[in-house]
Image 1: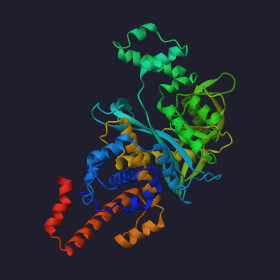
Image 2: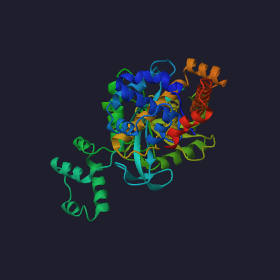
Image 3: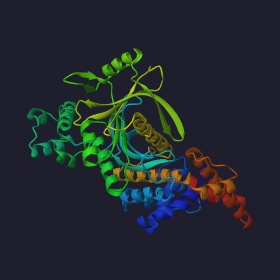
Image 4: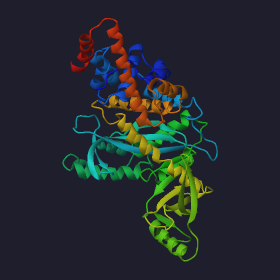
Length: 471
């Protein structure tokens, strides 16, 4: 059972950075919420409020704080990222050869029941089935010493009727029969509108006013990054779900950023003249030539998180179908025998070597770790119905996660753990979470000891501690 008689040291140390964003009462609830995320097994509002046995707060007031969101979430996010810019080890690094990487990706936060705002049946690529979920789009920073979330957004399902009305306002044809049957043939209507929107979304950006796909929301995160950190030059790493010709064009021409994206083996490479082949066919030819004595795949060393990784890669500049500009293409294998499934990477920096492109691609992995560890911190454990409240929850979980990442490089705080708990922290988040729970237990023991020394009976002390938990 988790019980708190004082705030965890991580919250005490870093929460003052955020105090000016809240009212005095809101700041108290903010610190309670972060404490619950870090220490409690029960991440619900009720579970978090029950933690604080010596300072009971009104549950309805706590609920209003989260649901009304009387603070600026974007400002909270900037302050959170600003916390990481205060030390050399955790700040953005954009020097040549040692640059950090921005990774763009999304994750599903599955829930049972349809009473959550904007819950939607979405395809789960991991388990290969549809599930009721919210979809979180994240922009994540990673370098060899640290990684943390930079920004995030929640996807909102489309109102296809509103999209169709907007299309007609813009002079885009919408089939009259499909429109008339939109309520009686709902699945066909949705499929039709998805295709129409896909055809028009980049030609008519005005459609974004009524609906944005997860990819468009990801682009908005990159735009915000360029706005908030104009002097920081970082490459963007994306998986195949975000790597598209129009997206890459916007990143390259509008945002002026370098990118490394993933392609699939069915995508088309254009060779001299009108010769077109799938990447799978092109790779088969390269393998035949390589095994015939023409070296096409070279041993490549990639430095990642203090380790050296070896790949065998083909690297050259090619035209890819759909892309206006030539792309730097890397085809890589993990094994010298060149067996297994190859990975296809492209970049708009046609002078880059395979090692640099593969290093950037490798730094996409921490966003997957963040999504998993964030869920350990309660990212998908909410029971909040209101979409605004869910946004608040996600922002607070990201803040708690960032505080842990900051603590992992805070020598003064780690020294406190060593002296007080007689344990050597290794900087990993699971251990830091356990240390915070141990700290809470020690604080509880000290509290009981102090109360007993002041003449309070053990029975009365236990009643005082258990009443808030059991009510």
